[in-house]
Image (cartoon, rainbow, N blue to C red; front, side, top):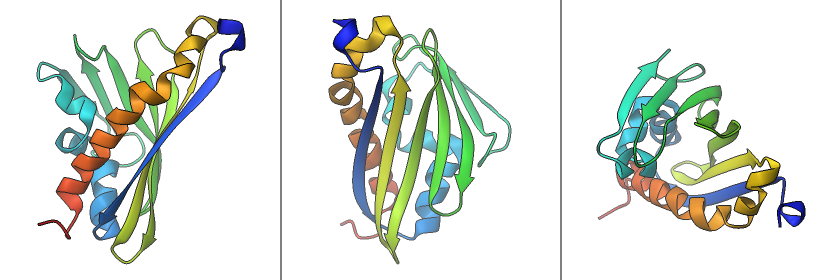
Length: 155
């Protein structure tokens, strides 16, 4: 099965948000803010977090230990105000993956996109067939959380 499975996978989700670009950008560019909207931050109340480097932008690091989610880290590796960040996701026992959060739009009409690109070692390639169904809902939940915090057009 591994022979015919993809060697990499990309998972992408988008969310419309009505808010100033700077306020949305600051939520995903400031690594400590992820606890307010990211699914993974809320999935394990027993997660132990450690932050290193600057609070935001390139070099900001969140390391965690979690019985539920596994151990890992996110490091912001690119930051382009006010439109996007790229980050390296390292999960214990896996190769590093590259993710991004970006926004497009004019004025307060924004579309926020979360994306993760993962290279899959030979033995993990069958996972590529399920990755969108496994990670996609987590992205959707995270984007909904981001919308709740930032959207100025909510009741």
